Image 1 (spheres, rainbow, N blue to C red):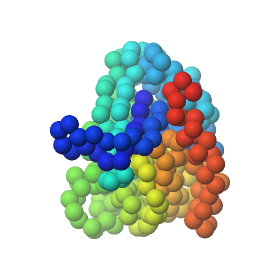
Image 2 (cartoon, one colour):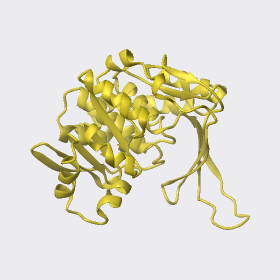
Image 3 (cartoon, rainbow, N blue to C red):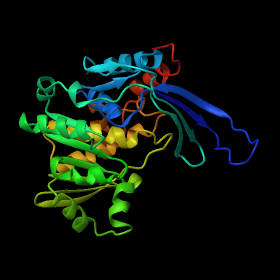
Image 4 (cartoon, one colour):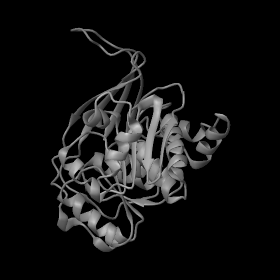
Amino acid sequence: MDFAVHIDKLPTQKDEGARIQQTSWQGGGNVASAVAAVGQLGGTGSMMGIVGDDDYGRFLVEDFRYYNIDTSHMIPDGRNAFSLVLSDDVTRGRNIIGRRSTGRPYQVQDLDADFIARHKVLHLERADAVGRAAAKIMHEAGGLVAFDGGGYADDTQAMLGEIDIFIGSEFYYRKLFGDSTAYEKNLADVRALGTRIVVFTLGEKGAVVSWQGGYAFVPGFTVDVVDTVGAGDVYHGAYIYAVTHGMDPVEATRFSNAVSAIKCTSIGGRSGIPTRAMVDSFLKDGTYDRAIIEEKVKRYESFKGM
């Protein structure tokens, strides 16, 4: 659960204040916001995991339903995780202050193999026992496994051979390769570990993508940034949507660059997620109708408004 607060400037001194420009109650989380993006773009999806057995948890379940996401395999337990997300006019970045969930861990025995097998793609954010077991189920069913490489972990690196679509952040790339700009060679080295498609996002610069027989640098888009929170999560959902709708790796990367850019024009991780029609228009001539985004901004202004 994210309480997004946009302020004029981030206080850096003791007893210094700031003025609130906008607030918003929104769902957050790596895979969670990716799945919401799939739904907003017009795809179908489901969310599995533990959610708080409290008002925040019920808010999140209701929000998934808004995006036409199946919540039948979400298990309520404990107090939901909560984050105060600060964005500001000066840095155009975000700072997150969080509190962990008290719910029990999601376990291998919670997995419903038949349910997983009915989907085309499994999207993961952890290379733990649950993730590996779910990936095995998905592969046995003939589906794809995507992974959110937002932050580097040895366990993630060891699982690359079980991942079909790996989308890593600039931070992950730097952990592996430092400041090297030999992107084509470096991505090929990652793909050699068994991953079919490797993407590394490079912020406003765009992204680099490697696949069997190809490599491309795909430039990003310039927009008026309000809040970058959730940009990577939404990017992953857009990429999964693109792949499952027949786009090749370069088309999928350009499409995802556009979705992430549009998201950054609005507060929070979800209010700025566009529809497919909006993205198509943006890619065609740089314009799009913001009516749905503004409607969601209003919707998220009040926690009780849900």
